[in-house]
Image 1 (cartoon, rainbow, N blue to C red):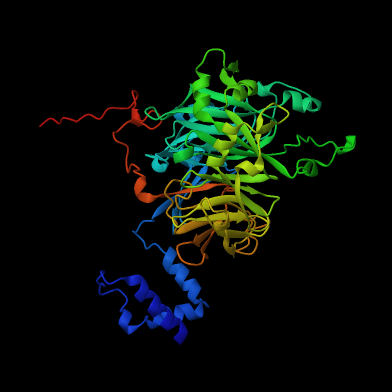
Image 2 (image 1 turned 60 degrees about the horizontal axis):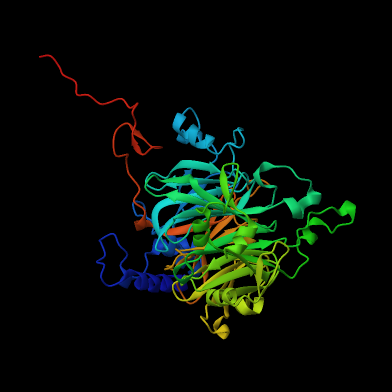
Length: 558
């Protein structure tokens, strides 16, 4: 009891600050903690770390969080909005799945039309698997205006207006069946970029699996975004054909690397299973090589080429730059990367790309400057499709051994990186070393619960990360919450990364979907409406509705 009292007194003194004058109801620090508070702490068995975490995350009634966290909802097909540090759910944004309580997709012509925009070959699709939200950016920083989210199941992308947190548009890629490396945006949101995951014959054609190498392909689709209209402009969008490797995750360059994109891949073996035919089992077949390929593409050059006559082929209404043209025009390059990679993350200064190989305990850091010199030098080989493969030693700067199952990386404001470790169930903190390979060092590992996937740091994938908070999106909760049957919630853990050592300060059960990735933005960057600007407002068009009933002042007889 005495220990807790002393700890609490010191903690409140440290957190209180000299500028604030306590109200009569506030704690009198000099007198120590109230006996009731000490009794509560003792009765609940709270440790000093528990109390510290509670003070850091508690947001009193009527007070507001510092950040919004926009989390994909996985198979719920929606986006979940969470306040940080309180970890309170603020809203479930209906996207690919109808929501009756919001009137989204039920009896409302406008929202039904939005959902119909994602129909597949005339068939209504009313479910989704949301994976990667992307906030719109200006000069590499979140601007709080728009949010984009993909549906992996049906290769669709949605546009959400953050003035009212409502979905305004869903588009379907006419040539893909599924996507994964989506959505992500360049520093000024000229495009919303999507990549395929599983290769298919383009344009919904059929080809037997025996012709996989010859007829199956992937795509990088550049959806042109019209900021003024708040819509993806399909007429000015285009795709880049890529090999039938399985593209996983991507990131756009920034600052010095603006204009380029980086997307990792696995199954460069082009394995298709077939144990009955004497082939390796599927899981083993896609992991035989020691390296896969980082796709390096010049999207600004591609946008110029797409406008030139004869440089594209129109497939199902979409302009496609085929592989030979992409190679001839210097748009597409490859570089070896650790096997089965799951993250390609550009550093805040745009100078380096971090790749984590799920089946390699290292993260590999590539130098953009070295990549440019290797391209200029022309000392490369080619893959089976004639695409230049840069020499690994010419483009790799450093490797850091972090642990088992490294996946995804975020950054803070102090020159550190954070990588999720799926098999270790941990977050690894390591230093960015600039041009000095020796400066890249593992600093700390913190266990999380359990089997972490993505992570999201406060503005951690922009040109100016905030640090302070990081959310671990864990696949399993197991023993963390009250039992609710065999299907358990996910566990979203809030980490304090602002001090010398990382600490878990909150466990949040997520029982309404399977979040995959999330982005965290300063709350003051979002200017959400409290009410619509006018009576009779059409929330899809964001303008007064022509069908609205106009208000009229009544006159009364004396």
